[in-house]
Length: 241
Ligand SMILES: *Cc1c(COP(=O)(O)O)cnc(C)c1O
Image 1 (cartoon, rainbow, N blue to C red):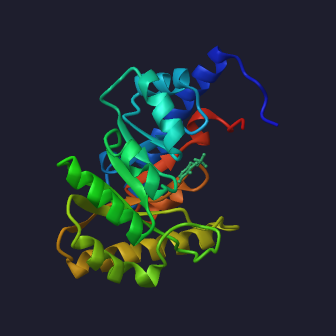
Image 2 (cartoon, rainbow, N blue to C red):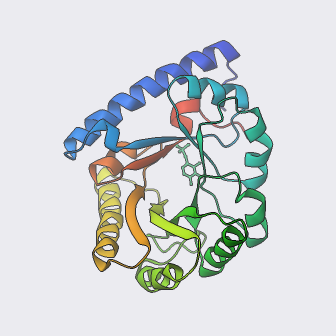
């Protein structure tokens, strides 16, 4: 059980954690011949109370991610900085698309053609373009969402025909690796897919964002080419469900 901390010590921890993470991101970026500015850090705020999210924002966080529509909608009015970018990173049911399409800056978890279609339809009605990432089930895990790696290209050709939906890259939550080598290999394979798709030059599909790496493995992910890491517990501490 994570211990219950006072608000003050939690806030101190958040500040400290963000500093440490930024430092590690900078080092990993250099290792992969990029700059700190090339990597974006998302604070994953699921289960985190707005007071702590707001504090993280004062410490330089400019992008937050939630995995549930309802939680996102109920917390957003309590976020004091309206310029912070908001991404949805969890499975999205098609019947909930209309609830969030107007409030999110990106949907990172597009995991089916059907969902892409619904997003396109709703975005078209609002005369707005919506940025998305395509989620890849790189480990082909039965209980995990995402396109299978071998079906991605074909699916992207289909999505490229849809109106008002802009694919900006890939997102993945790989299987938990036991060893560093294993993690490296998986991240490398996602990167390879990302480059492969970019070289295909599909109309309306760009491969700019490679969203991979979480609290336990973001340095490895960056070394293997990630330019967008999603960190929750590493910033806010263990989640109390
Ligand atoms: C919760 C979550 C994260 C962050 O996980 P941590 O291990 O707490 O950093 C990243 N990506 C997704 C899709 C998540 O649901």
